[in-house]
Image 1 (cartoon, protein in one colour):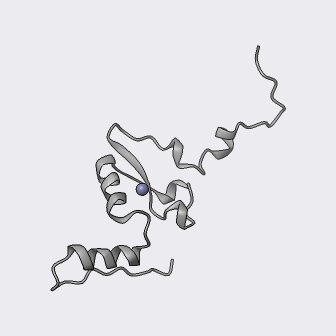
Image 2 (spheres, rainbow, N blue to C red):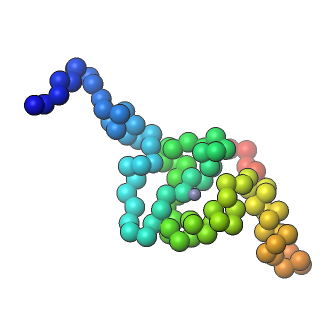
Length: 94
Ligand SMILES: [Zn+2]
């Protein structure tokens, strides 16, 4: 028996369409990464999602967790980079 739906009713999936990353198709071996982590106020909007190889995604979070770009730069400079160089990040006013 089909469920009754009032006129104009939209399922949760329909309401979230266009505002959620979950509908973004990925291929086997790919993963969805939040550019601005949700733990730092990032949204699930597709503009905040990057499709990356899953193995890279796993390594990114193993190295950098959900740290801020400034902290990621500090980690790279302290632990990974030739001392003759300095890795920097710049916040854009956009
Ligand atoms: Zn991620």
